[in-house]
Length: 335
Image 1 (cartoon, rainbow, N blue to C red):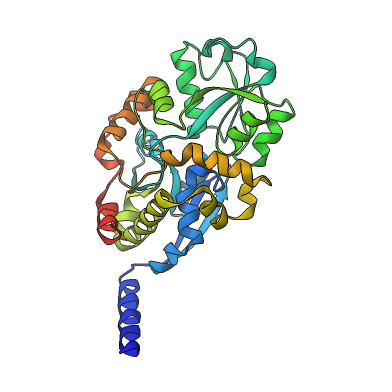
Image 2 (cartoon, rainbow, N blue to C red; image 1 turned 30 degrees about the vertical axis):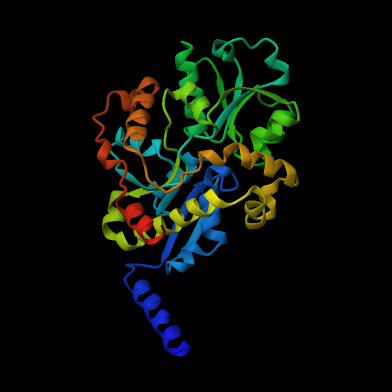
């Protein structure tokens, strides 16, 4: 009986994998060690992609915009990045579709350096500052542009933008005085906070903070790909979405200690206590089921139209920027 069951399981697995249009998938991500992309790392480390019959290669870039360029240029196939890029791309007549949500909040915070925080009263005081972001054109940059626009400042002329990545380079740039403010994600922001190097003045790591900046909760990190990829490889897309949904659900039940045991040691930045503390601050920002909310997509479009001239003037077909087709099936499989 045991031999029969083992054979049946093997046969079922082989059949499922045989249905894949391809097994090798190349994902580009901008700052893999950040909590923003934690479900991607969990799916990788716990073998969820492998369970779906996939052989996934993940290439890490300095920021989400750089990861996107890799896919646009053809060196990767799928982006693990911010949902908002699927909207911005339509302004350039490029059609990408998000198909599995990792984060339901942006998880980005803006901090002003200790040297500048004493004179900071409002976002108008950002004028003339050198502001660090993960990469120009990334979500961290978009937060800066949103806040500058609200303050009546010109995002192109009134500040200098410096790409600093999302790893140890963030800490070095702030501590060395290369930048006056930083827009970035955890655990880097929390470390700078605890070290007394910055004062956080805008925070989208919580629902309340996100509402204050954007006026609504916005979908954030996700898997997205060119429409042609999803049409050509629907079973591959389903397999990828299933792995992310499993990771999302695993995180909902996991403690900070559980997560620290799974991620690569380098993610801890040499300070496990900091990592554990940071995780508890952003856990609520992780999607519980991979679904992209319709209201969140509409709110993202409205927010982008406030400061992105290409989006403001574009005829955006929101329905083409995301699909829940694959994650709905994944949730039936992993209840």
